Length: 380
Image 1 (cartoon, rainbow, N blue to C red):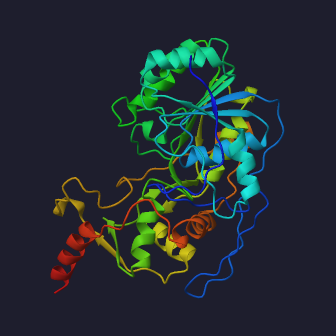
Image 2 (image 1 turned 30 degrees about the vertical axis):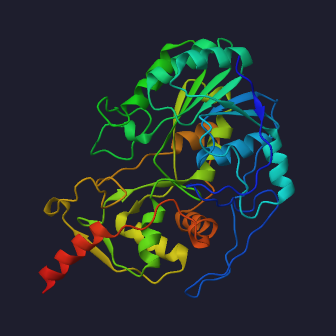
């Protein structure tokens, strides 16, 4: 039988995912003065929650990015929270600006179930032995990973799934809405198949479809890609015209949405797009990152990706197309609304992460150099 382990307080770990912080988190308000004539930054984004009946909650994953924010919200609400992970990363980490006492209190309440979710027999036996009221599936990618969980928990009250707006079929009619056609061949087809399994089973489910997620602790090179180039004082290469429209949502707003659907009858067997309210062009995003980090207006260099062979390297962190979704359903049905505007959200990310010298990946300007080298030849 699997055994739940109470996580003891740990000192700051040394591992690949570097620490950051929640702004205005646990009563600690952070202030920082940064470069290029920036005003004193007033942090925002305290994660507010409302009381609800205590639930026994399982988070599949939970030690990175979304899970770090979500687990704290759930603990604040008084729920019993268990993280199911392989145990390769520390289960908790103290966030910058978080007091030792607050961290000790949080970590003492987190339980851990160590295992591989692809070991279906273990998943069934361990989950059925413990029993859970609610499952938050943050890291599920394939449909066959979900069925053992459902089989193990026949009395499950709600299954809340982190899907992706990447499941929508490419269209000339935007923004994407929850009723739009989906693409069974998309690279997120596993998430789409998972939604289909949930719909076919006798379970109360809710699926959240984020667009691009950003914020402190982001392990995907979204805003970090721009910050590296801005800090180095380099031009920013942007594919084609730069007027492609995209959309970003702050991780704290996403965590709040996950809390909003918990036990919410209006969320049962429903899909919700979650992201920021505003859309932005690629060029506009580069300028927004500069403004958020207190950098000068960047030099933008546009290029035709078809003229280059980048091999397996990714020259730009976004898909080269218009890609954005409506969040009106979540606003009207759930009463949820994003707190962060784009620039202030990017400032929150910069000040609590990259601006502190923490990031997930070292800067790699090799594809930039290819683009800029050809640009200089053409200009000559």
